[in-house]
Length: 171
Ligand code: FEO
Image: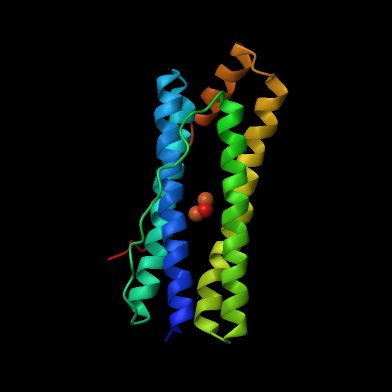
């Protein structure tokens, strides 16, 4: 069972995850339009991952006997000045998501809701990887300083990312 406060906070985080998918899908459009299709691929995989994150909250709410509420999703920023601009924004967004997951964990602890804490643990760990991924691209893009050949090499690296669907898909 989840308290109404936890249900509300879980619905809000589900929205944040689906918003992340929306934000990164917009970046797919930007990078693909710039002929950086490797980065477009990387962000498409990121989009699909964010959908699975939202689905995890959806399923957990249902399994806990609560009704998931699909809150309105705002239009994401979409006017990127450069690949670095987009990835710096993505990193800031992931830092925001980490902070909101941590707040959720604090609430679950305060309410001694063990199931919610165990569920959220996966996200606490996942956020380390999420921030690390975006930090990596920011650092590499800073290294090449906008040099076309450097950016194209990074684009090739980004093309290798593959989406791995979760082992137990949401119903
Ligand atoms: Fe689902 Fe990128 O946080």
